[in-house]
Image (cartoon, rainbow, N blue to C red; front, side, top):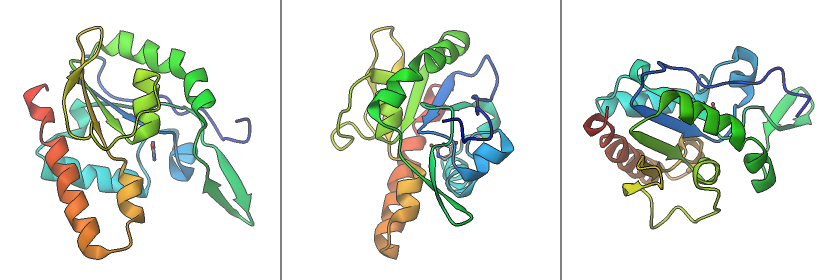
Length: 175
Ligand code: URA
């Protein structure tokens, strides 16, 4: 994705015990060169706070490192990465995993889950449930904060945000 401003690598302590994986940088992340600093990042920060998790203790990255978008006038509209693009970027995520060696990986949304497992599984049954990866690392799949931002119904959105907070509240056990 040559139209992106820059690659956005992960950030956080190399000794972090928990690694968070998102989908790909958005418009603001592309400009800032840092993950989760735009609207989804702000909701993520609020949910972390409500779950009693300190963001600075986490290593935060994305399955894909470049912003993919469609230009509409002056706006840059997010486009989801394909499975092939996620797979193409896996060497980079694997390198981050090898460096950090987390106890727990939390995936936000289906693209992140594919980035880690290599499979396009539906999130439904796995959401909020801890499993163990082949190398012994724990995996906790949950939803992506951008999905929460897209929910139109206020009551549904609040309920889903609370479920998201409940999922993230499992992090301190592994941190
Ligand atoms: N969405 C993501 O998946 N990652 C970011 O860094 C920002 C928004």
